[in-house]
Amino acid sequence: MLSNVLTLISSAVIFIGGAMVVIGLVTVGLNLSGIVQGGGAQLNAGWMLVGGGAVVAAAGALFRGLDTTWATGLGLINPSAMRVWLIAAGIL
Image (tube, rainbow, N blue to C red; front, side, top):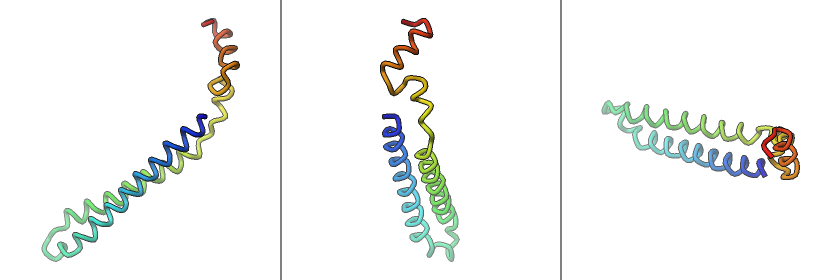
């Protein structure tokens, strides 16, 4: 269950990062003609959006590869193991 949640979240993060890259490339493409007229600020913003989108997409890909086997040992996946863990902790 935890791995399904991580996959869903990481897919959304990768999609958002890819969208940022596309928007940044469109911004760069639209402002290429502005270089001659001194419009380098928008061009710089476009490149920063491309770089930021790449970092976000890479973070999503790394997030997908997280190891979730630790959750089984804590009883977060198996309800009967969670009950045993709560009894051992003195909560139940």
